[in-house]
Length: 326
Image (tube, rainbow, N blue to C red):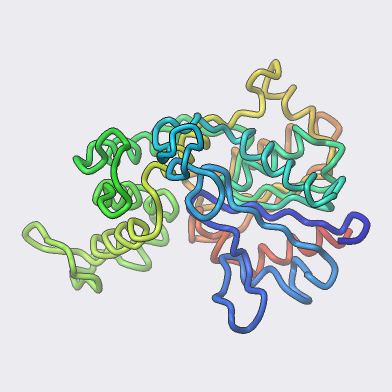
């Protein structure tokens, strides 16, 4: 990295640090269309860093990591995490890399929550902030969706109060949790167009009650797919971290939390998002402008729901590129 060309990318709930491939032999990353030479996040210009979230199961310390005091996995002895904790550990990483400030912090969903906390916690270290499909505080409805997901994991007999072995994890509970999550990531508009009431399910590996609809098979497929790759206890901890997100917590008020943000901000919402409704994303930008900050709002006119931040990369890339180029 030279000067201030470092750019921090932060992943979402079950994502990982593989945002983009490094060479032709790599598997594509989750933001592959956006990151690379000549792309919206131009690696010819920026030194891109994408760390794994604390508490996740893809490299950073989490519930399945070994507690050095006991020699056993932390499991539910792992401390509660907040979004601010995730950001604080990333700041220590940036310190270790010898980077004083970053040109921009960018992320979607849980990653977008962290973008806003980065700008509030370390205003002197963030030159631009781009929260995508994220608000300044998590909504009651969002917490409700997360609680259903946690409950089904904890009701799985294999959960055993969090003391399961990796080869006997509560995969059924996690799969059902993911099914609920997938509903919040999409939209009625998308599901109607994609599945309708089609009874001819493309995914048929699960027991059906009386008959089957295509959308049911899809949800089961997505649930089992996550259960094969993600740790249930990490899911519990990270959804609770999402719940904790409130820029106003212990800062006086929501407006006082936003007042800490001095970096120019581009808030990007999604018209059909039901997990982070567009009006809540727009509210962040509106309040920042009322506080005299440089803040803009762009709304993706997409039917793809919350997942548009992963799927509708052309318009997203245009907005990001324009903002970074200023």
